[in-house]
Length: 299
Image 1 (cartoon, rainbow, N blue to C red):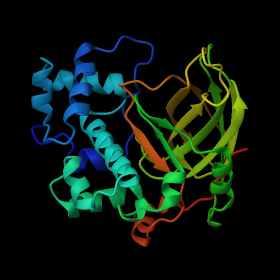
Image 2 (cartoon, rainbow, N blue to C red):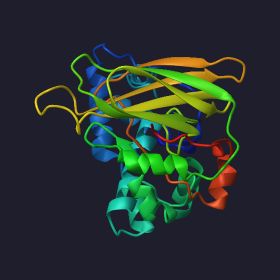
Image 3 (cartoon, rainbow, N blue to C red):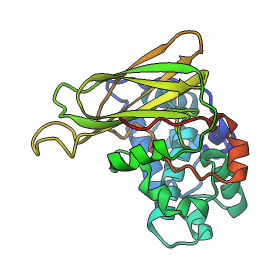
């Protein structure tokens, strides 16, 4: 694979990939590669060049990178670029054309089409105030969870769209030292979510607990949990923010379960920024028909 590692094939795939190896030492080559991606995501980057800079073969590099992060190098780079594009759309007055150049794309048309397919709305629509207000984001250096009031309103004000028939029980397991947290759990179509969840739920002021989400469509999904401990923790205790991600298969015949062990965000976690805002463009609705489901408010 000598083409740029953020090729359309890498960006568009939605299949499940290797689970990251939590609790194990991350190879220095992977950490250095992630640092290079974060430093140079706006440049053309190839798999072979990246592997060369960390002194391993491309095949071995792809294998150890996926084992450590859960995604391929190409998908990780795409996640970084889209995360930065979303940040610039929401926090600056730069034109879409300027943002395209800033995040490593050479064509406004290509970027806009890919953004629409991945996110479900155009870059211009992404600048609506509701998008930023309902932004859920986490990376190694930035974390954000909307207020409980905003989350409740997001659930209650969604259009009345057909709900799925599945029930999902999420067993949330916090780190031993973690304080109570406000937690949001979303069910997503992609291993690295870019658009709003097909269903979500949450709980306030919680430690390790079980959460049930009804109305989940049948299928194989990625469940993401984000917990904000900052509002309720002591200044000297535990992490301020923890996350977890896991695949799950939901059917309409029996309840599904998944256990999620939350941990502080690290360099090996692909950055995620999704909005719970409901106003997708018509083209986005056609591109993401599976998301036409009722979203559950946070308890």
